[in-house]
Image 1 (cartoon, one colour):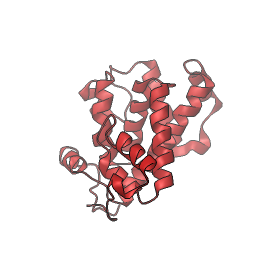
Image 2 (tube, one colour):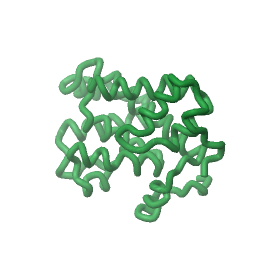
Image 3 (cartoon, one colour):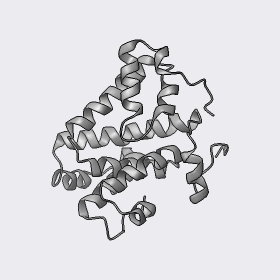
Length: 192
């Protein structure tokens, strides 16, 4: 149960309620997250509309976005995000056993670009202050500067969502089920 009272879409102005509903029922069911973020309507409206616009625009291939999101979420031990994005990564063509190996990048299902995205995700998440120029040279070989900026944005924003979900104990049951499969992830009651 979240630490704040979940709000329904009809508690919001109609235009924000439309954003809430559209995002909550997008690729995966994020209704429980939307119900908490609804306490700050401008944040819900702007963040979710931005994410939907980025998804529609397809500036960065879906596979790389979902790969980055699952890696960040595993590095940050966010069972909610791992449970909601793992199926999306599998839809993007990554086999279940390769997803299970993340955040490691050495699975045979990962090509050189996948491995670079995983490496960059590690760096942005764990030591953004120390990324070497060589990493960006390798990124530029596969991505435009716009794509590098968007990939970085999505990695950093995922870190926000990991912390938001964990701090406010947003869990629709899928995350708790994942904890039973992967006991290395801390439970929502674990303060570490």
